[in-house]
Length: 243
Image (cartoon, rainbow, N blue to C red; front, side, top):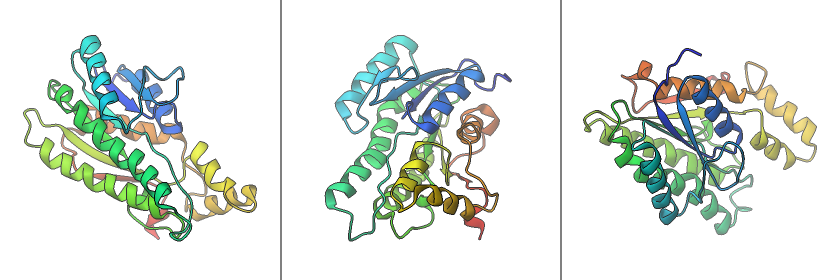
């Protein structure tokens, strides 16, 4: 442990998910206090919350304020994926993805902003995707949502730069990460095992990312070591978008 986040209180949404769990562990390993939020109750989750509910976020704010007084970092890792062509995506499918991925990110950031204003080194990291930078034929809703998160983050970075101290905001853009989401994509294919191999073959480094690798980058962005980094998009794709 190097103590990069010593004394920092970090809220992580989607704390029960692949990336969220890794971030909670990494924050704790760096001396910070992780605060997990998710709709599913697990050992990593301190607050049960529907990220699309403004009323539930108000309840989380009250709880964090009472227990911690302020917040030093926010990681919005809550998100879902929908794999289908435009014609096979219903409006209900589209709205659900947008609601969780975009509305959930917006509501979390808006709700936590006053608590972040009390920190001496506040930082927001949103979890977007390479699918927020490049398109895919069967990712209409997911592409739209992650692209929105990317630009929402840039807008927050510009607003946050006017605060004293500045609230930094950056987005991370993973490609394929070992875990539930990759397994879910493969399960939609005719032969899931071959689907895994096809996805691996798309990555120049020849493998999927480990959740801990994504978490390490997020911890760096949360820490004072990245004090001059805001409005950036950090691509973690093993070279996938370099081609």
